[in-house]
Structure formats: structure tokens, C-alpha cells
Length: 113
Length: 114
Image 1 (cartoon, each protein chain N blue to C red):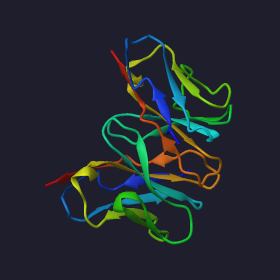
Image 2: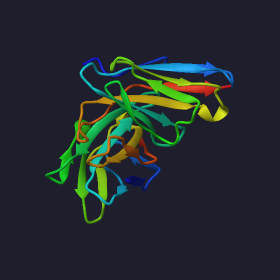
Image 3: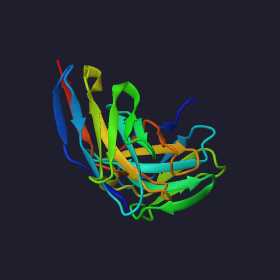
């Protein structure tokens, strides 16, 4: 089985500053990794995914993430945040023959002017 | 692509009542998933359908919960004899086949038990 740990529950950041959200996973097999964003009272929207190949993955809204197999991490970054990036961010993992996603507890990002 | 649609968006009911939620997936998606999300937590897997077949159920899905996808299109999730602990956001997602395929989520149904 796979599991995910999001190391920061809350990340306050000023507008136009960079942000990094940390995610570590645990698995005995190869994995697929995902970052989702959730705005208040809405469902989850896919930001980006790692399936195989290049370890640097670019997603929507200027986000990117780097897969590090040796450190079992998949940290999310954005070089310059906007007020509109204020949301809950979830890291998720699934296995190659596993259909369900296992989510972390989430990181709340609050962007201040 | 009209997205995953869930109905209702909010449901308030008294403890002990039965409730039913509906999910309409993206039309060409043959996989459909239900998750439950409680306050301050990430979504937890409940169950999954491949077309009309329910292929996996989580231990979270007690006997009071039942899900169907009768024609391989929309799905319903019913909770019987609701309890306070059932208060949560119930999320539906759909995807194409294959573990690589990303899941697309609806906006959820928020259930509040009085």
C-alpha cells in the first residue's frame, strides 16, 4: 500500500514570493504521483502529475514539482504566487495496478498582499 | 467535456434518516470513484466502479453505505440510518481506464447531520 505525508499543514506566503509545499511518499513499488488544488467549497482540480520520465514536471498555473526517488519526495513549487493561489493543496499517490488515490492531509496556502 | 457533476451540493438531514447522492461522470470515462473528505483531512477512498461493476470497497464503507452504477453511467451513493460521524464532503471522481489516467473530481456533496 502507498501513503503520503505532507510535511506542512499551513504555509503563509506574501504575494509574488516563491512557495514550496513538501510531500513525501511511502511505497514498495513504483508509483504515480499527483498534486491537486482545492478552492473553498469546490472539488479537487489536478495541478500536475508524475507518471514516468523526466523528474521535473510542469503543471497549470505556473506550478512545477520534482520527483526524487532516492528521497521519496514530490515537492511542489511556484516561483511567484498570486492572491488567487490561496487554497488547499493535496499530494496523492497511486500504484501501477492500484486505481484509488491515497491523499495526504493537505497544506493550506494563504497568500497575503 | 462538461466535467463531473454531483447533486445535491448540500444536504442537511436528521440523524437516522436515509440520504442518496448522485454523480454524473465525464461521459467517456468508464471508471468512477467515491471519496469522503472530513474537515481538515484529505479525501479517503470509499469505492470504485469499472463500468457497472463495483470492483473495490474500502473498510470505511460500512453496511449502511451502498453505491450503484446501474448502466455504467451515473452513480448513486446511499447512506442509511445516518449518524453524526457521516457528516463530511462526499466527492465523486471519474477517469479513463489505466492507473496512469488522472481522476477528475466533482464539486462534492456536503452532508450535515443534525
